[in-house]
Image 1 (cartoon, rainbow over the protein chains, first blue to last red):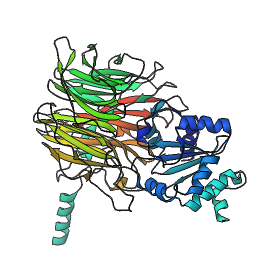
Image 2 (spheres, each protein chain N blue to C red):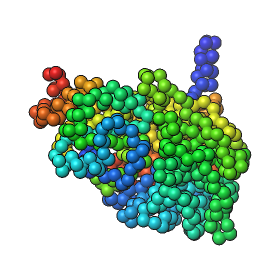
Image 3 (tube, rainbow over the protein chains, first blue to last red):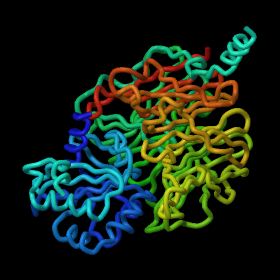
Image 4 (cartoon, helix red, strand yellow):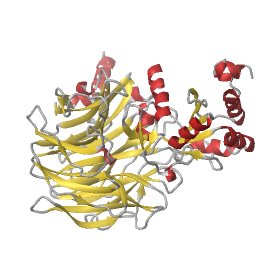
Length: 167
Length: 401
């Protein structure tokens, strides 16, 4: 399980989009979500943390989060200013290249790595290290705490669970 | 005593049939050479039609990148042979993906694939490939095939700007083996401003059925449409997957994707797909049986022991004798294995069965299946030592018990 997770996360760091169909994806409105390739490049160049959103067209919980969480103006501002945002559609046929050289689709990549549901979020540090993964509905407060954990560098000294317990 | 007898009788009559009670699988036969670092095989065509049987010939088609760029290949063998022939490269462009194969009569086959943004077909007779024919006009992909005797049909999707269409072509084989388009029609009457994805097609002597992923209602639904005039016109599209929306006001229905469909018996159809109606446990495999121009209710295919896990990559097969089956992969035994189910004598889905050659150590996934008219189930799949390892294709077949 650990090796699978490591493969999954390390793959993300080197994932390259071959082409994409932007219309197939459905990230929240008002956010500058980029293709994973562009987001990784930008995150690396600017040393900004990256927020990766695994979504699915028509996903109920994604839609709920778009309306009730991502609609929050403060959260929007924080993501816009301090993160590079990437979106991957877990049912799409978009082709990607994995670090082992394999070309496959976003959907096959997600299923191979046992992404059970959407939304699934992964935070990366500015130096492209995967920090943690969260799946399912997250409140505005939770998202704010996740962002704080990353932006204030708490991940360097504690685990997310420990950090959240202090809040 | 009487209760015991009644109980034993009930046990006997309600014993759930295993798919392993239907087929006994032979040892596996390598389709491709031993895994090579950096070489990956894919069976990801729309409808998952990668294996076909014509007479005493079996042919399989796939994509791999052993020549650096992804290309399409085909190989074949006679039913009694233990090795496949030397592979032939089917595609002719820079990059090619997602092939499909279907059987014609007389040990001939039809192949279709995506190549450099277009969709092509060509036929295979013995070790001879015909010239290629391009089917598409605009940017095209996700082609699938169905045949009945000499009648061949292809379905694919095209994108023109922000507009999407599904097209069906009827193809005739001329005396040189060239596939000639004799008719070409759009399935939905107008271009759509939302994508259509991963179409699949099935044909029998009474009609032609197309099913696909549709996104007009703000989420993905499966739709189908029927033709009684060899694909010249299609019925108004109907929904294939049942509508579930009960969690909250944002719920527009459970997700569905990757439908596969096959014809069986004289006029019957089986369609199977990945369905998220179970919520947090990921995709289940659901199916519907149809006849003529419609489908019956949705049915869960996999049995209880797979209820808490996701399932992937469903493939269907059927034959004129009335047999049908669904195959998929899941990791209920730790690593990914191939699983099969079919109807039992009570017209219920059997207990899931994982054929020994396609299970156990390593990752077995992406099954494609074909049923010949003797009821033999021909199985093709991808095997890897671990999930990021180079791959190999294997074949096995199950004899009816």
